[in-house]
Amino acid sequence: MRLPVAKVFLAFLFALIVGGMAAGGSRVWAQTTASAAPGGSSLSQTDRIVALEKQNADNAALIAAAQTSGDNAWMLVSAALVLMMSGPGLALFYGGLVRKKNILGTMMHTFAMMAVITVLWALVTYSLAFGEGNAFIGGLHNVFLKGVGLAPDVKYAATIPLQTFMVYQLMFAIITPALITGAFAERMKFSAMLVFMVLWAMVVYSPMAHMVWGKGGLLNASLGGRFPCLDFAGGTVVHVTSGVSALVTALYLGKRLGYPKVPMPPHSVVLSFIGACLLWVGWFGFNAGSALSSGTLATSAFVATHFGAAAAAIGWSVAEWIRQGKPSALGAISGAVAGLVAITPASGFVTPISALWIGLIAGVGCYLMVVKVKAAFGYDDSLDAFGVHGAGGTMGAILTGVFANSVINPIFGAGKATGLLEGNAHQLLNQLVGVAIAWALSIVGTLVILFIVDKLIGLRVSEDDEREGLDLSQHGEEGYDWAH
Image (cartoon, rainbow, N blue to C red; front, side):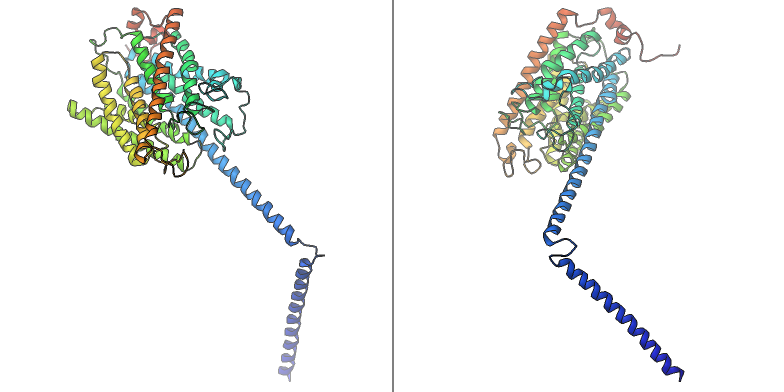
């Protein structure tokens, strides 16, 4: 009797559950149908399309914001890396190469540029280099950094603030005149150096930077210049101008007392070694940062930079090994710097294998400039600024026209040949025009400035001050306090 009652109860309970689910499903279906009806309370099909479009626009804005943040972060890091190339990189590299009585005076040259060129850049030279102007120099629209804010300038870099672009380019403006100081190390007055560099930044650097990278520049390849010269990170703007100006300055000043009869070996190759390694690391910001974004072009420039430096270090060392019977540490680091110089204009245009060739050619070529050409002509380029930067920059700029590849950077448009080996022989002519202009501007501009400064305050320290050393005579202190 109990078993049938239990079965009836379970059947009744099952019917309630199934009926409730069916009723709930009916209500859901009714609500769904009502929402699809013209008078429903939910979105119509048109409204849903509008909502989806808004969501897509919001997603695109978020993606663009993420890209801007990534690019901006990379560019700020790159700016810091380039500044590291000046101090401590170049300061240690040059400081170790001079005699110990001149280490502070030599390092102060670079440090002074970090301060003086920064202020000058804010006042006028950024405007002269990157402001709207003519084919040769910018105007005065951006003096005192007027109009240089946090919004991008799409003609220069569409995804980073213009102020980021400005401060990144400042780091190039700092290190370029600092490179020249290697040619007149141990014999120029500090006051004369300051006046010379201020004038040089306005008369030589700013016009060259504008011609190659500025809006409407004569040599600007990305913005339709009359002679599109490929210079990704400063082969002509930085290294040719500084190296050629270094040679002119060394010739104008004359040789150091006792040169070349008196031995003047580096007082600390260890310091120079550390400086060279810092230069190598910082150079990734110099070249890969010149992509002005954190995309694939930055990767390509990064790889080319490393490969070029490595090949040049080997090339210089092997040449030295063959000639002198052993490779030196000074030769290896000098070769690496030569490779970094030569790959600079080409870094954003060439394949990794082409970078190896450029580095190898520059390593051997700059070695011959330093040990053969310098000895043959007898000029006193104290720290081989011309032999490495002038010669290396010239070789690199010309070789860029040979090895540039549109697969790496289709700067002239998709499918259009870029360099000589790709079928664009005319590009080699453009590179030669760029190099010739850089040489001419550097020679004439530097000579005029040297003459003016020499007549106003004099360039060289006295013979007594030179014998005593720049540390004491120019700064009243010594780099090393030896215990007695």
